[in-house]
Length: 264
Picture 1 (cartoon, rainbow, N blue to C red):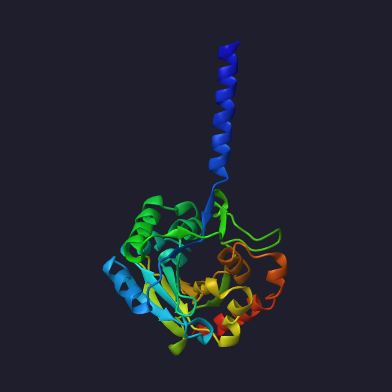
Picture 2 (picture 1 turned 90 degrees about the vertical axis):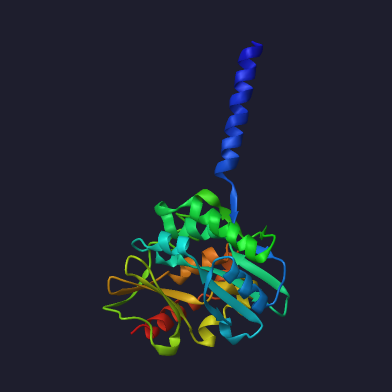
């Protein structure tokens, strides 16, 4: 009887442990010790990252988003419709004296889907830690195992429900292009400068997540794609409530129009 009870108890413990693993949360971001933009940029380069641009969303000069890539990210992103995973971002807020970085595991699980590579995520996280210091997960988290299939709610878009901005696209127009990153499969990822009115939603739902910008466009096989804003904004602000989302209900359409105008 005791042996049977022990086996049952063990089975229950293993089940609870497995359930906890399945429901593990993954933070979208890490906070890091504060340093100024020049220092952060230099340390990122020293840690093996290529800095593609430094951008102030919605023309807010105290917000500096540093967009970076490395060989591992570019390699992982060189697959069909996976180009959005080629970059990570670091936000330096000189007014709040904070530094925030994207969590590679979170974003690569979301954007690489079935092509997710834990080694790339782990090595990139390690490099970010080397550059920025101690990384502390923020409360902006979702179930780790559900990231690849994430959508905000019933009827909302998934990762694969991308906007097709233009067929026969040649790139992004002039000053609208903040950076271009060519991938091994021939795709090109662009960072896009939109108008202040299109980007100022960060003032409503949180400047602390301003590294949601700059928005990106992927040119692949002659077509221009972008992540649907109803997907991208929701996964970038995982604590966003329906009420808060409704405050920016017009923004997804505004972003789509801005992106279409940027493509040539």
